[in-house]
Structure formats: structure tokens, C-alpha cells
Length: 190
View 1 (cartoon, helix red, strand yellow):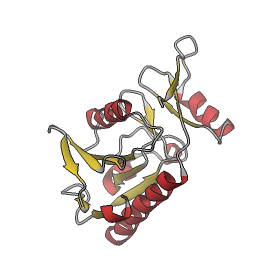
View 2: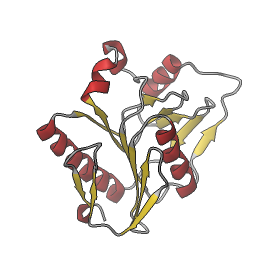
View 3: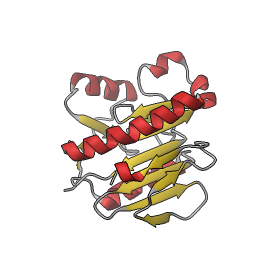
């Protein structure tokens, strides 16, 4: 299934208007691409939601012990430098970057790209579209990203200034030097 994109060239929603649209429609998961078009995200099934909750739990537990940053789930929206507003399935921002965000932005969509992002493919996701989104995160400042494809038991690792690395059925993933000492147990994801 392809994601539904609504051309908004004639409307030009501001970020403030887009935020209000999201508030007014809490049952619809929306993103905005760099052209200003609305991207309607399809709901995920129970298994995908459960696996994503497990990923968030592992990331949150690591961060609660390290206190190195802030963890976000898929309901957070970030205004990227290219003006897209994206909501990764899981993300993390270093505490140094988080402290630079004005307080009033933290209650809405912050003008920031997370340092680390995860996209977990659900059966309704399109691989090519999700790969483009991962590249967009890296181009806009993310240092590390994982595209987890449960159907193929593959993980695509995106890093700044490096080629995409593909791992087949890994048991775990390392947060490398971005999320120091974080290891995601993939057995709970597959």
C-alpha cells in the first residue's frame, strides 16, 4: 500500500496551521513533506505497534540510565531544516541539542532533526518511500538511523557521510558512538 499524499501547493499551510490541523484530527497521523504536501500515514497493525513499543522501551530504559538525551515515540513531530515535518517511529536527541530548543517549541513541533531515528516497516509501508525518508533524516542532520524491515529480517543502517549498510537478521544493533553503550535486542523485534 502506498502512503496517501495530498498536494497542498494552493494552500501553503504554515507550521503553526499544520500543528493545529494535527491537534484537530488526533485520529489521523499526519506528516508534511518538504514541498508542503500532507502525508497521511496509515495505521499499523497490532504486531507492528507491539514491536515498536518494545523498541521504544529498550531505548527509553537505556536513556534513563545514561541521561544522555531525550527519547521520543512516533507521536512527536520535528520540523527538519528542509521544512518537512516528520515523525519517526522512535528517535533520540542529545541533551545538548535538546537544551538549545526554546521552551515554547518543545510543546509543539521543534525546529530540529533528531540525532538518531528508527523507522519500523509495517505491512502498509512502502520500502522506497521509507528509504527516501531515512535519507532525508540523514541529509537534515541525523547522525544514525535504522530502517527495520521485519518482513525481510533486514536492517538498513544510515550514517552521515557513509553508504547504507544492510544487515541480514542481526541479533542486536549497536548505538555506536551516537548512543553510547546502547544495544537493541533484535530478538524481541523479529
